[in-house]
Length: 71
Image 1: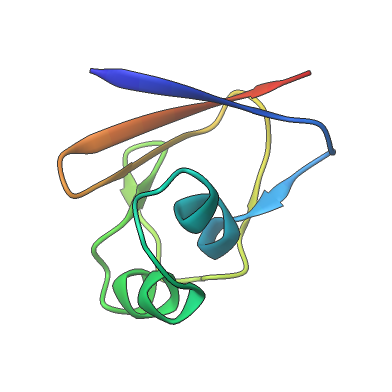
Image 2: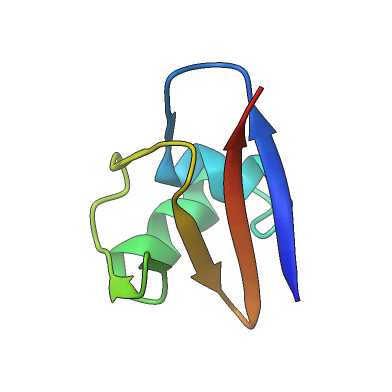
């Protein structure tokens, strides 16, 4: 199942998205899971916690998938 997250800015950083979507409880946890290579962006493993996620991107982690949409 894919959840849809709407952002009202041009982009959101990957670690902030994980926290905002409720997939991680803290920013530190989000940073760790990204650096450990546990997060995929558009089907590819991403280890850059500051990666800019824009509307249309898909992020998956821990069996959940998020589609980012613009306002």
